[in-house]
Image (cartoon, rainbow, N blue to C red):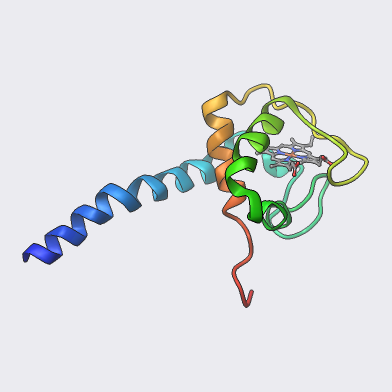
Amino acid sequence: MSKPQLFMATLFAVLITPALQAQERGAALVEEKVCFGCHQMAAVSIGPPWQAIAARHAPRKDVMLDVLASRIMHGGGGNWGLVPMVPNQRVNEEEAKILAAWVLAQAPQAGQ
Ligand code: HEC
């Protein structure tokens, strides 16, 4: 491997891999914690679709990461409709942050 290639490979390993792993972990957690029972990717279910949540909070992602993580753990209501989200008691703080980051990354790409 040439020096630039080695540099790029290292950069990828250091910067990109943890981000990808967090997204994979998030995708696994939404399945595991049965979030799809009330949420779907693009269609309204009992709860709002992931894409709509991500799109709404896109301008304030940094702040919303903690706010959403807290709502995921403790529940919340009045932001989307009449139905509140019940507390998800089997979600700890670390998992809630990974889930919030995953949700925030689901905004539809331009052109989709
Ligand atoms: C029993 C149904 C139900 C389950 C299970 C559920 N949710 Fe929700 N969720 C809702 C409803 C209803 C809302 C809209 C609440 C509102 O209007 O503020 C919501 C809102 C949200 C929001 C947006 C909050 C906001 O203020 O924009 C996020 C993020 C979210 N849910 C994530 C999750 C995750 C992650 C899980 C799995 C751990 C999960 N939900 C499981 C019903 C559910």
